[in-house]
Length: 94
Image (tube, rainbow, N blue to C red):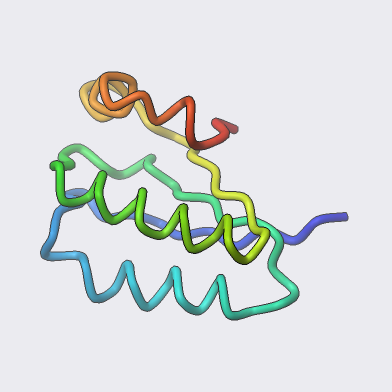
């Protein structure tokens, strides 16, 4: 059974969340027992291009470490922004 770690994102996911996002993603990628990282968008009401860029940067790092990144819980405008950015081509939706 694969082990996934969750990263619960804040209501406003932008560059202001950079340090915490980096800390959580680093911890997950450095943990050899974790096979996948799930970005929980259930609380996100706002995200910007900086957030999308951070996600892509960490997705490349995760891929290099043979870890999957997934998205769950995106809704409303947040889901539309992710779709416009073609994130479904890069991240698995669960």
